Length: 193
Image (cartoon, rainbow, N blue to C red):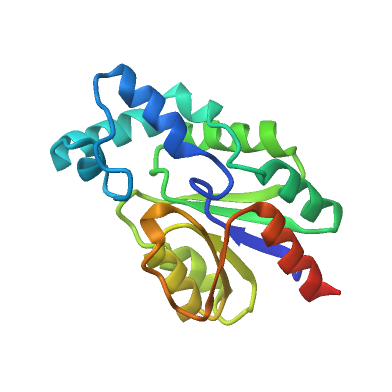
């Protein structure tokens, strides 16, 4: 499928971080580190507590109401209008009910036609198993985590990195850094023209 775009969900399509922060703040935790990707560092809690909170949040009904990230709704809609579809590859966890809630959230925000596949991986599992099927296909891969962006390059994908404080050290010229979905849509549609 030539018009398939591979994308992460959280920090790219969905504003998981802001939604999680509201949820975890109610439970008595405040951010102390705005840059770290590591939740234990971000909230100054133990690694075990961070993992517990992560699993609790990702398997709760809250996962069904994560808002769109920045201008993702308009960007994804524009790409769908131009014939593109999405395969979301996310480290949500392997809970089947959470995966159903995630898909409901994506369909609610972006419509039933945008995401034709959702792959939810264990939070500690590499995305290489999912990306392997697209190796050297030259498909677009949109991500916010530096390791997963580098993995995309290694797999022969055209890799886009959504700009965040936690990924500022990435300087690979093969990775295209963007700030908005407008940047993404312009890039993809210009290449297609």
